[in-house]
Amino acid sequence: MFCGHTVRLRLSLFGAILFFIAACQSHETKQSTEPHRTTLEEFHTLDWQRQVETVEKMTLNSLDNIELSILSAAVSDDDSAVVVAALEAILRLDREDFLDRVLPLLSSTDPFIRWCALRVVEKFGRDDSLIPKIAALTADREWMVREVAYRTLRNFKSERKTRTYFYPVLLRLSEKNPQVVAEIYRTLIWYDDDSAWPYLMKRSYHCKSVSELVLVMRELARLKTRDAQVRIKTLARSQSVLIREEARRLLDQYF
Image 1 (cartoon, rainbow, N blue to C red):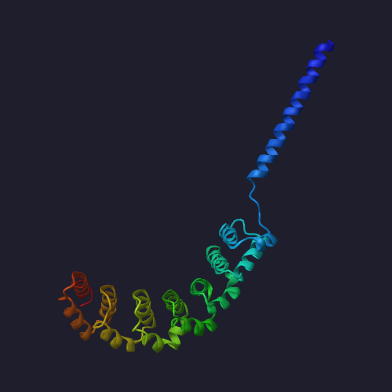
Image 2: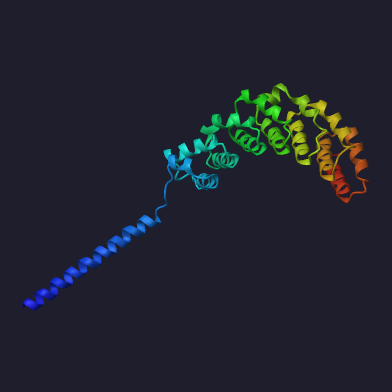
């Protein structure tokens, strides 16, 4: 009887020990699977690579007040890589509330920061007071900034109505970069001003590439004028197969 009681006691004690060990292991496993949440104080002590990693890991579902404060600090960081990561996060997370913090970065000396900041403005900026700043960036020394600036300008209906910057855009048809040139054409078309068409006709004789000439041809075809038809018929005899085929397609579609 005594021996049986002792055995049961020992078994109970052994079971309790096993339960305690399992509970500890479960707690340790839970702790190990929970990611460490960086505080603002810790963020300031990290090197720039780890700061970038911290910002890049932010997701819409987990953004809290601490992460918002980190994102805010990252936007004004001294390192350009951290600032760019913050701007990309603002775009990714749709944080329109950061727009006022981003606007000063349009004047950054770093062209990549200007480009990223302008993309944020392109997505969220709708205040007409931004138009002069955006128009000025169409003359930026970095072509990527110029490209986005033209695209952003087309977000403002008031500019299409007033045509304040129509002629400055028109006079930039001498642009060398083909991607920027394409945005200039799209912007001129967006203005829908007849005074642009003679310039486009002239440009059709001086295009820098086949792709640019195709763009010009398409917009000339939209005019459906006699001059445009004659010019496109001439281009239908071009030595370039691509230009000939596009010219013939446009003649069939518009004339």
